[in-house]
Length: 112
Image 1 (cartoon, rainbow, N blue to C red):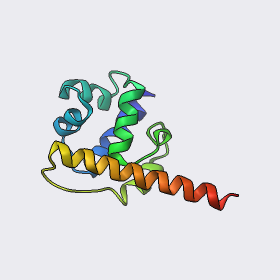
Image 2: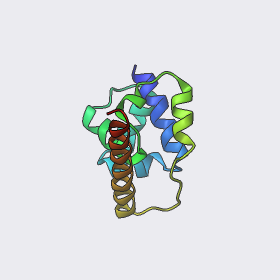
Image 3: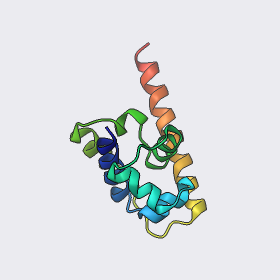
Image 4: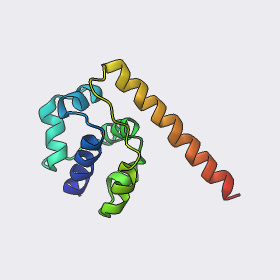
């Protein structure tokens, strides 16, 4: 399962044009630790996965999906920007959380 999560982390990071270094900084990790999560050599703690989901604007269960189309569909709307500051990355993550929460609420209301 670590390999699946790692592959999905890498695909999402690259689609957003973030380096491992910048992603690791945002997560409060060393680049080498984050690289181990992407390669599947180490299991990422749930707190790290939750934070990375905020940054990439995806649901946690998406990271566990072996269905490549799930990630590919997510990548269609990936946010891409160059040279984001630490504050910019935090703002992007907050914005994506708002959007994800809105979509969840909208879905719940449609199912009533």
